[in-house]
Amino acid sequence: MAILKTAGLSINFGELWAVNKVDFEIDYSQIVGLIGPNGSGKTTFLNIVSGIYGATQGSVHLAEEEITNLRPFEIYQRGISRTYQSSRLCWDLSVADNLLVGTYTSQGYSLFDAIFKPKKVNNIIYDYLQESLDLLSYFNPDLIDKRYVLAKNIPHIDRRRIEITRAMMGKPKVLLLDEPTAGLNDEETMEMMDDIRKIKEKMQDIAIIIIEHDMKVMEEVPERIVVFNAGAKIFEGVYDEMLQDKGVVDAYIGGAQ
Ligand SMILES: Nc1ncnc2c1ncn2[C@@H]1O[C@H](COP(=O)(O)OP(=O)(O)OP(=O)(O)O)[C@@H](O)[C@H]1O
Ligand SMILES: [Mg+2]
Image (cartoon, rainbow, N blue to C red; front, top):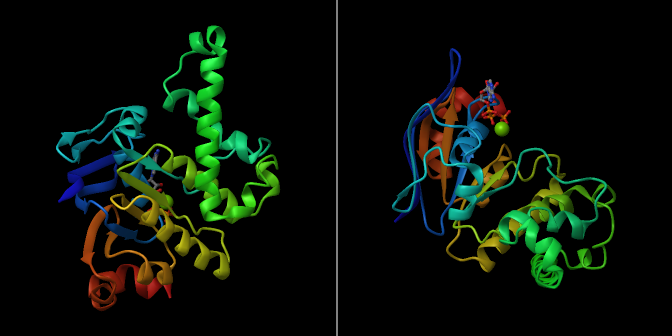
């Protein structure tokens, strides 16, 4: 059964239809890979689903509920979390502080609480930090000892892990990963593939959409692949079928290899 479904989803920037009539579905606990040439609309698609851009046409449903054009925090609260193609960490904050960014909105305490009920807020923050450090250490146990190290001084892959942990702390039903292996070397890419499997171990029902250019990741991680070209969905199916698909080869694979 579909947890996330888009129908005819479209957005234009002037003359350009960056996402064009996309029908897309992902089931509970499925991993779907989203690929396509640069500028084919992959990130824009995630931006509409997560509420950053409003759709020009079409709809987005999360399970039974229509969530088209709700605001980002409303969509997050309903169960869609994401990471970004380029890092959103604060370089001059520690690992722990970066994990805490966002607690204010997600943990339901107000500015009033922060001023007049410091003990309550302190407990909320402490519990949240413990839980997020536990989760982060599941990806790399060394990060517990590095919790006070500044984000700019830890390896790139560990920064990605912080962003994934932060997204998972929202207890999402759907997790959107925009190029999680961008900038990683081959060895780190293998580690990231393991990390994605670990997400599934922790949260069995979670559905994951992963945007990737790395074909090895696409071969190994997703159960199903969707290919975009010029804003439109041109293929969906399994990896081996995709390799044989003439439209995909012409638009993407031929150029990517
Ligand atoms: N806010 C915006 N205003 C105008 N054009 C935009 C905007 N956002 C995206 N676009 C355009 O929409 C198209 C799709 O961009 P998008 O970032 O979704 O591509 P992508 O498939 O994620 O590419 P990449 O693989 O390089 O990350 C591009 O032509 C881009 O320039
Ligand atoms: Mg992109």
